[in-house]
Structure formats: C-alpha cells, structure tokens
Length: 109
Image (cartoon, rainbow, N blue to C red):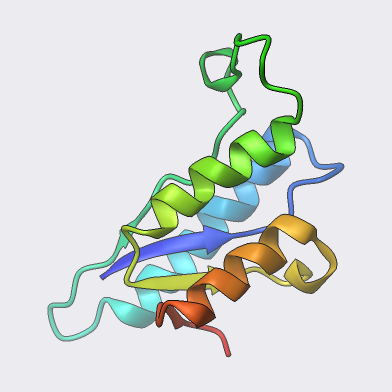
C-alpha cells in the first residue's frame, strides 16, 4: 500500500517537519504492516532542500507550485493520512477533497 502523508507545514522548521513526518510514517507502518503487508510512504516533502525550490521566474506562487506536485504524487497513492490540524490548512484541505473525490482511502477517518 502506498501512503501519502498530508500535514500542515506552515511556521515549522525543516527539522520539525521531518521529525513529525517520520513519527507519522512509523505509526502508519506499525498499524498497517501486519500479516506480511507492506507500506510505502510516498516522499511528499517539497521545498525542504535548495534543490526542490524552483528557479523558474514564471512561478508566482510557491504554495500552488508545491500543491501541484503534491496532487501529482497523490495520484500514485492507495491511501492518504491526514495529520492533525489539516482542517485548518488550505493545501491539506485540497488534498483531502481530491482523495475523497477520487476514491483514495483516508486512513484516519
């Protein structure tokens, strides 16, 4: 099962984001890797390293740019995990709506 983690990242340091993502990934694997099942956590972190930041001067909204990448990656997911607080963040809400509309399993509902 391929799992996409949707989590709020505003006002968090890269270290906080990575720590929270790793904690969530461990919890998902512990819960869903039973009876020989396999969970692959899709790498949905964009903009964490300088290599991830677009240099194209045509990009006027980094938020939309990263959301576009997230939606593309979400198309590969069997399931999505919505981290606590997602309901207060536009990007997470959009990812949630897309998952529901396209029949991607929401693990924590």
